[in-house]
Image (spheres, rainbow, N blue to C red):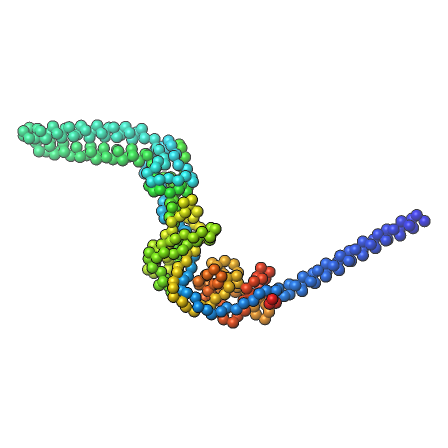
Length: 350
């Protein structure tokens, strides 16, 4: 009897488990069906490209470069005794960077000084003797040549000694150091990379129509894409006379950095070139752009499906983007809801 009850209980438990699994399966299938229904038609907001008046003001993007940048090389030979500046340190032009052992150079300078002084005294004596015809003109000329030669040797010895005290040729910041105390230098040994970011150059490229609106010396507004929206005043310092292979013209804008050097060389920046004239342009809301302004795309809706298409943009304002190529007037463009889209997905307009 007990055995029968045990079998009945086991069967009941197995039945309950089976029922639970079946119920879970049905719920999962129902959820999958709902998800499938939802994925069949992603709700989006749709807009169309429109023709509107736009002033000829335009923006251009590029990278900041230091106003000065150099790699400092050794001009002397010897072992480093002192390293005064390291990576990240600020330096001023003329400030000591490295001191090289100079005992031999100092001794050479003392010898050259003694030789020059002796040759000078000899020349003075020979000139007095020549005045009384006590020596030949050849002897006087030799004395003069000796005095010039030793003077040249003195200048060279002084320069060699001075070069053991290596100083910063420009003001800026140590970006990299390549030597240590005890390193042995030879002429041409790399010492430091120094950059000056008190001012920077924003190098941008503009189209052939835009370059005609740019004037050297013009003031422009500059922003760093990685910044907090801070604006800087820039000045156009150079305009290319010839286009590159992509028919773009290089323009350099000089920008004075903030007191704390917020701008860094290599950062991406945007320059706004203001122009009063107006023109017709094809515009889309900025939020319709997928990806960055540097590599823009949009989702074009056709037969209730969304297709990603690359576009070429021109002027970018705070809320609109000029479309130069990629879509045509009248085409439907996804304005919002792109985050859920993939190529060829069905969409429904809100």
